[in-house]
Image 1 (cartoon, rainbow, N blue to C red):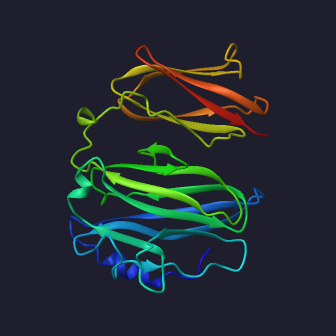
Image 2: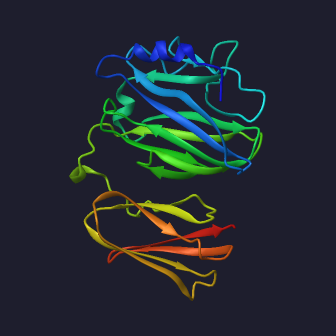
Length: 265
């Protein structure tokens, strides 16, 4: 929790025309995994035709945190003004960078004085244009996923990269499907239930299998009939599995992809 961010709301109200938009970023931590929750809900990224990619008046400095039991989400701008490098609002220029595969990237950090399971959510409303987006944590990409869960260590800032790109079209028939599933499992490690995300080119039946560490015994088998083109999400239940290392396999008639997962209880 932070002191009230009055200035951020005034700046957001200035983003009024069609080429300007913002996304609210919410961070929440289960302090010490004790079911005591701390939040930081008032963070904004976005674009504006009058903004700069570097520091300008639309970028709002990060207020001080509470003395303890806090979580803080902030954008990092090393080229910011002489007094601040951390910002609760980072507005970049609305230009052609958004219409290519590189796009625009926001470097943010989340930090707390406690460890615990932490949720990062992008609140996307109807003002957001047709764009691809991804969240990157520890070099792992989460495509078209607006909420992720990570395990945060006390006093160690975790880099969160948010990229908005290819804003020309998101019609299903025009999606640029990668050669792989873009298969992700989160959280990882798991302690009960988790989620997987994957990308398909066409409607397909998907088989989800979990194997032991030797890869020779199928422990969990789950079928998803007629998964749709584009991004798909499915829950996985591992609460009956013991702690250890496993392999999760995503399989269709065309492709197979496997990831290593860890279960901690």
